Image (tube, rainbow, N blue to C red; front, top):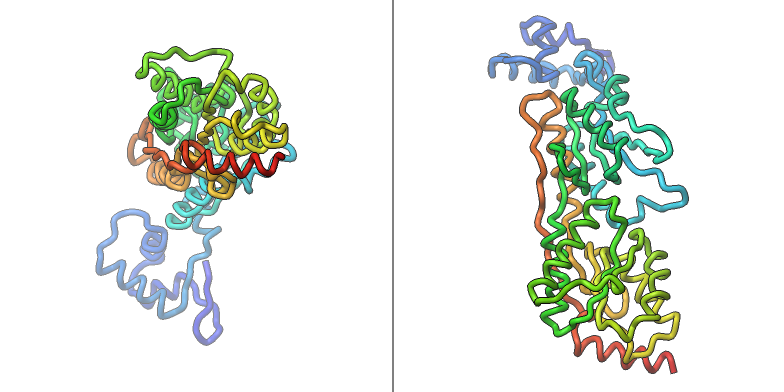
Length: 362
């Protein structure tokens, strides 16, 4: 470990020890934050290091501590998908990165191909990461086995936005049952009764949670979900566009649509307009995520705000606070959501938009 003195000569750990009047081992413990050190001794070492302009070499320090200095982030490999431009991934990654920086860690992005065997344990065996935050996990056998191996070996990890029934994995997510309940409940309170539901794949637990909230809201009004009004997309705008064709064929049977994320909701709005949906036929629409695009679409989209940044920050905090095994990893942590009401689901505001839409379609 070396650094540059003010006069340009390289300073060493031995010189720091001599100036502070302690051993090199003590200097190492102070600078690496290892073991109990008296406050007076710590201050002497840090003062000597500052005077000499000494900064520990991070690579050597990590090797000495048998750590990589990396917080691993598992991302799904989706060819041609612009993951980093997606509001969901960008916000969560910002939260993870913010916490990692505070703790002095770098991020190592690892893309997982769904066609290949899942082996997260290998990343720890090879000392590539000191902890893992896992995004895009699905409830599949291979995924469960890989996560069980991490838990069995007491590796610091956290799963984001996915729940595994019957397991006790550390997880951080939003309360999607309550969020969906608020969205569907808002439409019901506005007087809509035939509410279609455009959900994501059921291999994701948040899709299951959103459906549960939707069904609970209907039940509170004495209503039973109608299977012919339920559709499945894949959370992309294109799947919203595709769903628009099927929904347009049954518009006379519905007066509102709840979409499980904003991208599908926006694709649906654009698809219905492209098909030539009339003002009288256009349904009320509610999205989910409250992405930046929710305010840019016309009409502005009512949506459920999900604290993605805080989810990422909390997940990283869970991993990094437990990287040394100092405490048991927490179980499932759910952060609150919030319904943000805009024009797309309000009668008077929608009517104004529909008049504008009608003029454009004529």
